[in-house]
Image 1 (tube, rainbow, N blue to C red):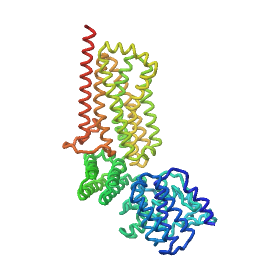
Image 2 (image 1 turned 135 degrees about the vertical axis):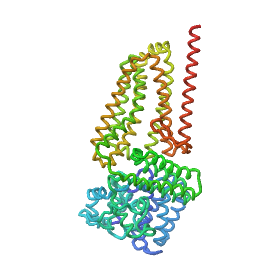
Image 3 (image 1 turned 90 degrees about the vertical axis):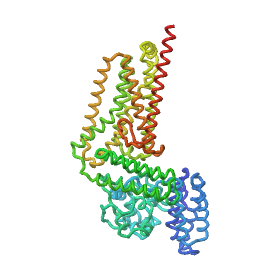
Image 4 (image 1 turned 60 degrees about the vertical axis):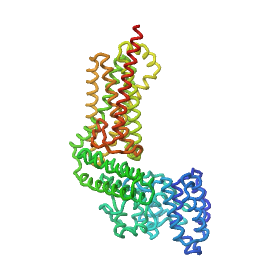
Length: 622
């Protein structure tokens, strides 16, 4: 009966989808875990059907790897798979096959960048809820595999209370949930990564009892995810392993991001010691993006100098790995960063902000972020209104209105914004900012060319035609949109951190702060536009073009800083620890030199444009 089910389900399990690195690790993990059930000892097959299954799985693994360039081009993986098949055919001892399959699983995960660690501590409470809704029917409420729907299944549902579970890692369970289990009725579940990790950690905790532990584990999250209880027992006591498996992190515990940062630093150090520099670089970058960045916004309110020191320590780790430096130098940099992270726990233990403080913080955050956008909008609305085009004015207002709407949707569906990896967030922010710099410089020069009344009149005679075509309208819409969208995206991340701190209890007050800040920003814009209407036309252009160039220099610093945080651009500390985020000033040579370069380019461009205007004016008079 089992053979018949296997014959029917196995083709479905192989799927017609593109080869998947995660599926390959799943196959290898399954071989490592279940080969001992097929071969009792070297040369002795205890379960022919299980042994046949192992042969099919290793063939499937070889076929899957052939379609994955990173795996097929890796000598260790290619030779290892052939050796794994040879050992299975030779009915090698269970330990030999299990160890080789496990090492290949780890190797594939490394070379193919398979994510094996959750981005934050999984929630056992959420995992239990998901388990009871989707898994208990077969596996039983207590995990013994005795659910009401499991009695007729062959083979029986897995018993999560069995000794076998001590050999499984949460990563193995994650893959089983995500991809299903071959030869069984276990289907794939389309949970999100976060939900899947929650269930995987809940299942891993079954045979450790029902009591929940609130004390932070001594075992890093990375090791808890990638190692089985058996493997952990080599370095930790049974009590430590059991306590770590039953650890329930608080949903409001923002210090969990400190744990993530420290875990990734340990991973970076370990990978560097093993000679895997690429993995070390990724882990060091993740320590900042997926850990530090998610709590530094809160710390910056209380102690901006401490945040600066922390950022430089984290950057030093990345710099030492990137050079590359000696193992001792990297170890020292990691230790310094780790100690600084540990010190942040004291700062993060301060009481949750009250309602008034939350309101004021939200107000300050939005006003600060809105400042740049308001300056850009004032410059463009002043010029557009001088042109007397109602359609152009509507385009500018539509641009910032759509950006605000998307910002509001990001808040409502902020899980999407937070689900983006830190790398994706920084690249998105850096890219949008860099594009804004290009646009601001272009329109700064464009406005400068119009400072001569004669040129302005010629422009007005042309613009009515071009506006009718919609070309200029779309450009104005795009500038207005970009000016506000970048600030809206960053504001959502700031406010989400503020909400996380209070566990959502002060969200109403955050809303009041945001609404008040927007009202103030709109009032300032309206007053500025009214005052600008009294200024001479030429002066409006001069002030606007100068303002846009200054903003371009400011945004250049912020863009380069975002790319530095994403690891795309290196970090070289500037001797003077200058940091004024509002002006885009950061204490690195890369940001400062980039800003000076943009300033020189803008100055040269404005000078040459003015010189060309003088020649054109002289020719016209002659």
